[in-house]
Every structure is written in structure tokens, then in C-alpha cells.
Length: 145
Length: 145
Image (cartoon, rainbow over all chains, first blue to last red; front, side, top):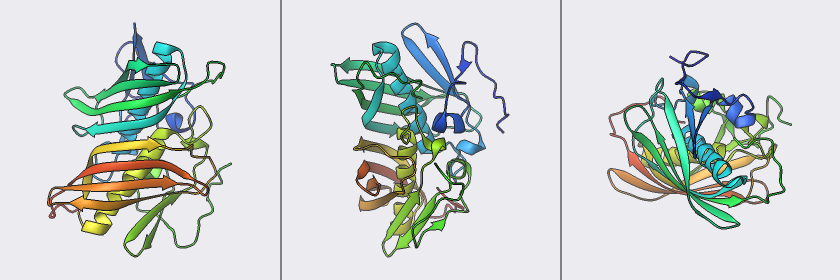
């Protein structure tokens, strides 16, 4: 069901710099579209739950990472999740190309509020609302995916 | 940092029946303690984010699964997550033994409310509050991890 090299829409690059969780649950892809960063992946059997759909936790992880990336792209700050509310709207299907993105809807020097969405070719899959703590500017981190 | 066979506290069995996401992010462990089901795992580099701590999405996935298991153990019903609110309280450290469990705090025939917690040897790591939709009783599913 999941080819080892998934087919990928135009404009997305593989996050080959991914490590740890992002690497072992990848490949993940990213497209920069002006102010937006769109993450994408094509779930396979390794992302499934016992119902044969994408594991809700995998969806949560992917959206959380996309929301953190939106903070970095918009504010130039690394961030960690403090609070995240997730609404599961529809199942994520294996083999579909799923995308996720975040939007900074407010921030101060310490904290940012992010709206996130994860969606497939036919429907919204997961909605998120998150509070992220902004790390000190001098902290240099190779990647936070 | 993470041995291939992690050291496991007494009473936990490996979820060898795990498939998909749970298998590829395992090994995960479980202990039944009367009315409680306690899940455990020892995170390694494959569970990390770019900061060198456990990926928040991995923590979310593990807690979500533990909460779903609590529904099954308490009500005898399979369930899918509808809404999940997560509070990140402290980092999850690689190499620590982390546990997660859920408690059914209310339910009717269709829906259950679950409180969840994920904690390490020193502190609470992640708190959760979830709404789960209960699947029809006749649906037989091999495992939902």
C-alpha cells in the first residue's frame, strides 16, 4: 500500500534533515508557499492503528510539528508545545496524501497561539489550536521537526 | 542511549500484538493493575525531536493510545478519539521509563470522557482530557493500540 518512495505533489521537498521521531515516522515533506509552510506525507501501514486508518496519535504528531514549523517560519523563533487541543473530524486514510499547516493567530515575546489543520484530498481530518512557548532567540537548534 | 531491549519494570508485558504505528514506535508495554491499565515505554533516539527530548507528538500518541485502552478495559468498548486536549507539563527525557494511563470519568452509550496522564520517574509530563466515540459493540477489532 505504501511504496518506499511515496509519490509527492509538485513543490514539496523531503525533510532529509529530519532526525528521531520525524525520521522514523517519515518521510515527511515540506513546501514553502510565501507566508505558508505546508507539510505533507503519505501514510502507510506503519502509521496505522488497529482499525486500519491512520493512528490518531500519528496525526497529532504531524500536526503539532507543522504548527511548530509555522511558528519558526512566521516569527523566526523555535517553540515548544504548551497546550494543544485537537478535534478529530474524519479518519485519515492510508495511501492518501495528507497535508498540515499552522497559522500564527497571536503572539507576544514568550507565547504564540497557533491554529492548525490537517487535511486530505477530500476532507478536513484534524483541527488544532495550540499554545506554544517561544524559546530564547539565542538558542540555536539544528532542526525542530 | 536506548538498548534494543529496554529494561522494563516488573509486571509489564510487551504489546507483541501491536501493529502499524504502535509497532513501529515500540516496543510498548502494558500492566493490568485491577481497574487500571498502565502503559509504559522507554523512549530512545527514535522518539526524539530536534531538542533531544521526546517529541511532543510521540507523547500525545502514547497517551491517546493509553486513554483508548482505558475505555476498552473499563467499558469493554472500542473507541476512537473525537477531541483531545493536551497540557505539556515537563519534557519527557530519553532513557526514562515513561508511563501513561487513562481514567473513564463519564460515559453514555455513544461517548466517553477520559482523563489521561503521562508521567516519568520524577514528574508529570503530559496531562490529557479526551472525548472518545464508542464503537458499536458488535464491531470486533483485533487490537486498537
